[in-house]
Image (cartoon, rainbow, N blue to C red; front, side, top):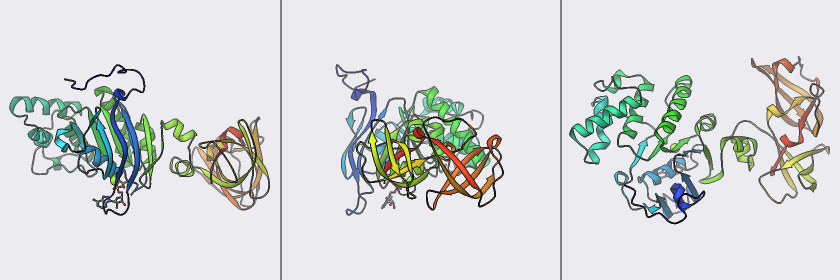
Length: 375
Ligand code: ADP
Ligand code: MG
């Protein structure tokens, strides 16, 4: 039963009803002196896979704990289905949770572990057993109910934790670095599995990770956290191609970030002066007004060997090779240019040549791939 009174705007895009979760000016301080989360405004759409991505200590877990009801915001409001929930205990929020260390109870069977959240909700007997069976089948562990956690592989234990989060059919599931303990291959497999499950069950997911490739793989949108604040909120492609500041440019994928100063700015095209005095053209990004000192950001894969491909609207420059590493599908070339700046270029192997340290390298990049950020 949906107890929320629908407003006339229900269903129209961007209406508050589209959002299952809303953080409104949320701040959190543990010590009463400094905020570990500040000015948090974030709305999560129904059915969305939203990831909070950021380095350790950036406030991701704290944010998730406030949504789950395990921590109270110091200031601000959190709305779930349009209703404030700051005072609701976790078990009244209908939220499934997979914690950072998803600790299963070792003395309980798999089925007992999965049934655990049902106890809190007063669901017992045949109803509980049927729900447990359904949850285990969903994660392909239908035959494992009688085992103990120690008799399962890491990936299977992870799936039990998932079944435990899904067993009471929550509309919202929170996961905090759930795959951190698994090796790379299993982690990548589970990423796809969790994503499929989220889509097929139509669950809204708020997922925490510090792993940018995990975030790019799984998410509809990513909120990049740093110092307790969201630096950028966007879909994976936008985040990768149009980072709005230096932090995002360096945290998502790899980026060469070079100091430069503004020379001129006409609509769409901006010219900047590099440390050696040369002038490059770039796209302005992430900020309306540019002035003075800027950062030019170029992805390693956007740098190409000049002359290999005809390029229009491109910047050309030369540098000196410092190092070259063969990495199977590409050559990783490190080049000094613009008066002492070190750049990395990623050259596809079929376009690569041999480089010795000291060789002169002519490089080019499209102006559209040269993004200008605030210094
Ligand atoms: P993340 O999950 O992004 O690594 P956290 O939310 O865990 O970040 O932590 C953010 C900051 O809050 C860190 O500086 C951390 O030390 C601090 N912190 C987290 N939990 C507590 C707590 N229970 N008491 C005091 N400080 C905490
Ligand atoms: Mg954390």
